[in-house]
Length: 349
Image 1 (tube, one colour):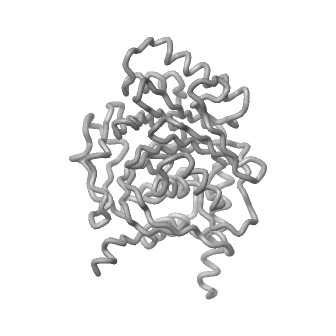
Image 2 (tube, rainbow, N blue to C red):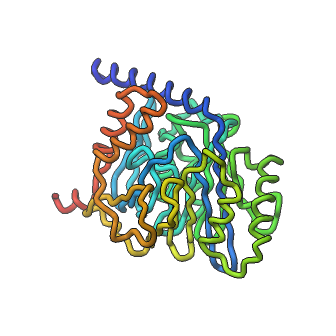
Image 3 (cartoon, rainbow, N blue to C red):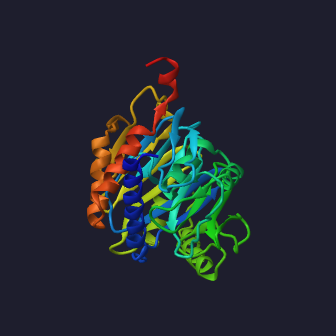
């Protein structure tokens, strides 16, 4: 390891430590995620509550070789090839999503959890908490896949203490938490009210989480809706909306493979049909700003993503939290150099 690279890594580690400390001091977030079904129709709702509301919806391609952001002087980043395409919601450029759904209907969402203590000092390859979301969407179909993949890695945190809500297309859901330095898995239940398909910012197996779940599901049942649709999901998200904090609301229809979203800066509902997308990595990554104002189907409005756009979104984040420019440079450089299309490689392109 040469001196210049070692110096760069040391500066980066210092910046990432600062980032973690800054975000940890912002504990007012109250994100919510839940699953709801009727018959064979499966939905997941997510409320994203945070200081910032900027970001992009991104279409992630299949057969792209990736590796995790190196954040430690020792330890090996996770390396993988995306098996499935996905749609994600990103504030920090490509490869750093906060949540999304893949083409097989698996949803993964991230929520704040102050009690989190990540696994450390193992020989497992490392990945940060945001890349973990992409890793799972790239490789998993079922919650059994999620468990297997999670056990094979350790999270090297760069941002925040979080837990994860994953639901497969059949409606089975799993909460992944890191408590007392090890991964724990809690599978939810359709029928047992003590294991709700709901998670917020309390550890899953606590009275606080249970009470919040009962309040939300009471709201859903009080509507006496005979059909589950995006409007019902958004009404439930409105019921848990946090004034001055809620930035995005997302409704995933896992059965139809469609995602609906709106934001406080653009309240009209937009949607995208995942079945209509081209996931070949021979084409460019496609994206649209979450603040897109025109309602309806956004498929014709998707545009090729650029690292300039990624950098702009990372800069917004960095300026809000007074973060050093090195973090912006490294995150942007990592995105630009760590994604390799295996299809292009096979064709000699």
